[in-house]
Structures are given as structure tokens and as C-alpha cells.
Image (tube, rainbow, N blue to C red):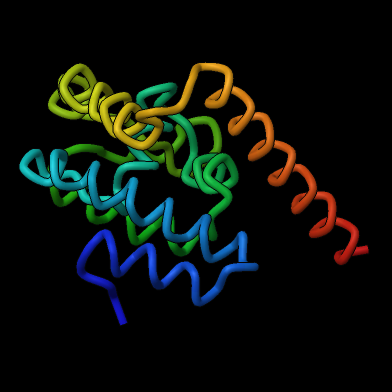
Length: 160
């Protein structure tokens, strides 16, 4: 059941005090909710955000490559891209060199949104790290990267 206030969210965490995964989920949901409050007016949902972020870095890539970069299933990517296409933010073309591949391109409208929406991420991060020193933020980032690497290693060892 979703919680409704800051106090409720904090209390909900303590019910799972040993769960880093649950805490990471709360952080992710809080980031997404705060960011989406500002991006929704531009037709960009929380689910569309990671795709746009990646495409702002480089578009004209295949749906499959986009899925790999975002660590998502191809089917999930296809659904999200349909939504982005419906919003007029991307268009897809069959690759002329390999007709089995579909390439994803930003529309001019989506390109223009980058200047408006990318600063939202900085604002949300500033809100999240308020009261932390730059050294604490860097230490947190370093620890989170280590956790990601540890989990990736554990995942790859279970596939062998």
C-alpha cells in the first residue's frame, strides 16, 4: 500500500530496517515522483524519462541497444517507445543497412525539451542531498557504485 506523507515513508522504511533494497526502492520512487511532477506537463512520464535521458546522449541507436543500455527487456522498451512515439517525442526507422533492426530518433520537440528538463534532475538531486557535504555526496555515490558492481558480479556468477 503506498504511503502518503514523508513521516509515513520514513516509518515504512523502519519496518524493513535491514533492507537496503527496500531503501533503494524508496529513494528511486521519491526521485521519480518529484521529477515527474515537473516533467509530466511536457508529456514525459517517469517511465519515459530513462529513455529520453539515454537518447539525449545519443539517438539513432537500435531498440535492442537502448534496452541493453537501460538494463531493460526488449519488450519493456518496445512498450515505452510506443508511448514516446504517441507523445511525439521519438520516431523509429528501419535500419537501411540491416532491415531487422529498428533505430530510434528524437523528434525536434524532444531535442528542445532537453534544455528544459535535464535541469530538473539537478534540482531533484540537490533536494535529495540537501544538508550533505560534497564529500558525503561523493562518498555516497562511490558506495552506491560499489553496491551496483557487487550485485552485477553476484548476478553474473549465478548465470554460470
